[in-house]
Length: 240
Ligand code: UDP
Image (tube, rainbow, N blue to C red; front, side):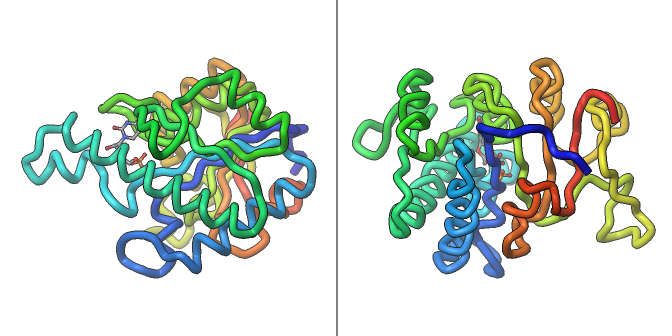
């Protein structure tokens, strides 16, 4: 499988991967392992933007299902993504990787606001930029935030690190004969409602020609393998 030629990448990690084997929250040891994976990718010379979800702490939909106002619950979800961004920043800086967090919800005491030109400068200086709080508006997700930042920062690909090793034609946990795609088109993902990212994120990637690489971040060394074209993954792109 040939990977797209990649110099700058946006890596999206769902909040769930930060909780390791715990049922909730942040597993520091697991975040430290993830930071090593990210460092290894960076050491190959890549420029890296990171977006981390918040599902390990709070999801707006869950709050709404429990009777909360949806927008209010979504703001809580956005704050959860900032906590995760700070946890990842801490883990990366402990192993000598310079980072900056930029949040779409301004909180000056904790991190920078999202400023594209400043983010460019950070990348030029070899820092990793962690974009927090998604797009900064309720009714969106960090997948949309990831697609937006990938477009804005002109990333060559959006890498979605999750707990499954790609995109399947059915739920592999329920159907043992489900087949993993090597490549699949944006349009098929949207038409068949395949579980990759939410539709607005997929459409944004499609409209800006950004390939989405879905892979498992739970296996050690997998990020580097995927980037070297030796990993197990699914690539979502124009022509499958
Ligand atoms: N969220 C939001 N707007 C955004 C990004 C996130 O309202 O632009 C909220 C939303 O409630 C979401 C929560 O933050 O459920 C956590 O993000 P997400 O569900 O994308 O996290 P992940 O599933 O990747 O862990």
